[in-house]
Image (cartoon, rainbow, N blue to C red; front, side, top):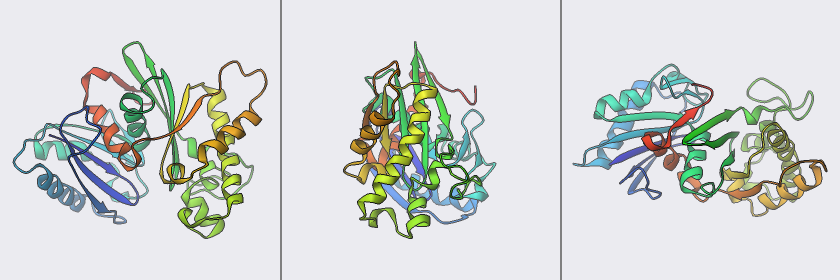
Length: 291
C-alpha cells in the first residue's frame, strides 16, 4: 500500500493507493487545515490517519504534495505560508522513519503536473504547462528528454502584469495572483470566487491570466496547457475565454501552433496522484531547480 498526502491551505487530504500507477484511491480522509498548527502535533495527527487507512497492511511508500517552497532533493519544507511552524522540517522523512518506508515530497503544482503528464491529459505530449488557478496561482513546465523527465517549477503567480498594481501577498505589486485567484476575488470584489456571478469580472480575470500565459509561452513553448484548481475547473467558459484571448494576442510571426488548452481530469486528487510519481524509479524525474 502507498500513502499520498496532499497538503493545501484549506485541507490536508490523506489517501491510500494500491499501486504507484493507480489513478483512483482506495480510501481518503480529509482533515481541515489549522493555521499555524505546531509541526509535532501535525505529524502525530497525520500518523494516526495513516495507521487508520493502512490497517494491517504494510506501507511501501509515502509521498507528499504541498503548497509552498519545497526542496525535493533534501526533502525540506523551505517556506510555507499556511504552516509557518513547519518551515525547515523534513515531513516526508519523519513519516518515512515512523513507517519504515520510502518517502518523497514536492510542491503541489509539480505533483499535479506529473500526475497529468503520466496518467492524465498530458501523457500524449512531450512538453506540458500545468497551471493551478485556485486560492492562489502556480505553474510548472514539464518536458520529456529521452528517458529523463525534466521539471521546471516557476513563480508563475508572481509574474507582474500591472505596473504599480494591486498589492500581492508576496510583497510585490501587480502580480497575476493579485488579479486572477480566489485571493484576488476576495480582495478586489469582497466575494468568494464561487459566489461571483458577474460575467464581466470573469472576463477581466481571464484577460489578466492570458497576459501571464503569453509570457510563459514566449519564454519557452509547451504543446499543451492543463489547468487545475477550483477556479479553473468550476468555470464553464474558462478555457474558451483563454483560447479566444490567446488567438487575439498572439503575434503573427509566432512560429508554432497554439497550445491545446485543457482542464485537469483529476480535480481534487491531482496532487495526490501526481505525488505517487515521485516514488517511481522508472520516470527519472529531475527538478531543474534542485539538481
